[in-house]
Length: 136
Figure 1: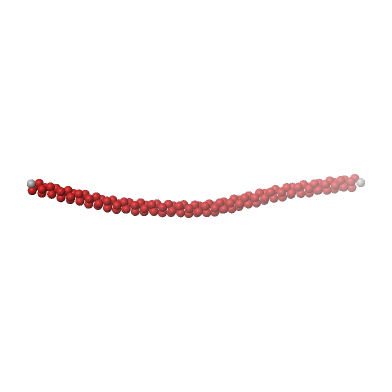
Figure 2 (figure 1 turned 135 degrees about the horizontal axis):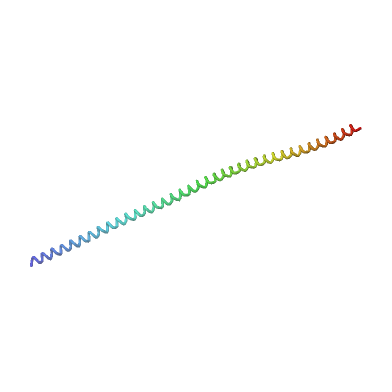
């Protein structure tokens, strides 16, 4: 009888110790889970902040690159316009010089014809006069 009572007491004590150990383990797991959750939240917050910083930096770099590209494109367009303007001016000057040369040649030809015609008229008049003088 004594052994049965002692056995029951020991069994009850074992059950209490087992329940206390389970309760202690459950609480410890809860503490660890809360710490892990807190760590995960901190990591997620840091990742979110990092992602936001990366987005802001990326936006800034893109804006800066667009600004530089637009500036350089404007400079390049201005240089092209200036170069084209210079080409047009040189073409116009060459064309004008060619036209002036052609006009000068034409004027010379016309003046030469007039002078030759005047000479011919004068020569014919001289021949007529000499013929009339000699025929007398």
